[in-house]
Structure formats: C-alpha cells, structure tokens
Amino acid sequence: MVITVKQMETPEEIESKSLVHWQTWREAYDDLLPPEFQETMTLEKCRFFSQKYPENTFIAMDGKKVVGFISYGNFRDETIQGGEIIALYVLKDYFGKGVSKQLMHAAFAALDHFSEIFLWVLKDNKRAIAFYQKMGFSFDGQEKILDLGKPVKELRMMCSSNKNS
Image 1: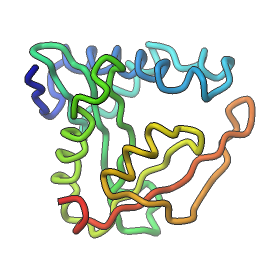
Image 2: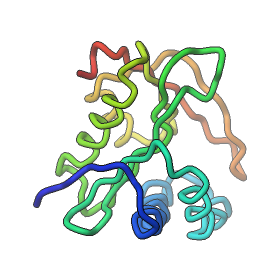
Image 3: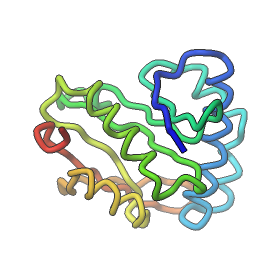
Image 4: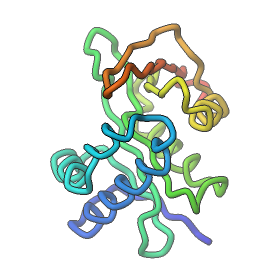
C-alpha cells in the first residue's frame, strides 16, 4: 500500500473528502458525543465544509481513494500567533498504517513559519491524544466546554515547531 498525500483540488477530491469526513466522524465520535448531536453531522454538512473551505486541506490517497485528510491554518484565536491543526480524520481501516503521521508532517511543513502549532481535542478521545503526544504535542492547560446536547470538554494541545521536524 502506497499512500500519497496531496493538496485537495478537484471536485471529485472535495466530494471524496466529504464522504471520508462523514464516515470518520461517526467512527471517532459515536461513543464520545450524544446521539442527538451526532445526527446533526450529516453528509450535507460535511460537503458544505469541504466546499466552503477547500484551501489548507491535504488528503491522503490509497490509489484513487481518499482515506483521510487534515485541515490546518492560522490559529483561530487571533490573539495568538500560531498555526492550528483544525481537523485530522483517517478511515478506521487505515489506523496504524502511518497515514495520520504523513498528514501531520505535510501540515507541519505548511505551518513551518509558526513557532507554535495548536489543536483542540476532546478530553475523552484517548486514541487521538496518544497520537498527538507521539507527534510532539502536549497539553498547555487551556480547556473549554462545548454544549453538544450535554457538556463536552475540549483540551488544547501545543507543539513547538522545532519538535515536529
């Protein structure tokens, strides 16, 4: 299996990324988020995000099949000059095959002009936290509560750019 990571460009890639987003959202969060909230994350909503924000997204391809993606950019809190990993999703069948690591390295390269890179992760998403820690991220003490039908805690993680090379 050869995974290729590239910038998302074509309408077909945007549609495939939407499908991956929808499927991986279910795989990642069905056990972590309330069912009522999960029902709001429809394929149409994923398609909307893919079409509205096509820039700053790398996709991982197994042949012609999109199997994961990462979205990145400037940190959304403008009081901090840093990069942000906004979303990282890989199909469950591709867990443990280095796909997430390849996507992270592509985003690190794109964000290399920042000295710090941030991300938010659900407190109960143990698998994601373990992966991010392997990639050099650590908790910086910031947290927020999201109201997703019930309160859900997100924790902020940060990585210095000299760690992720």
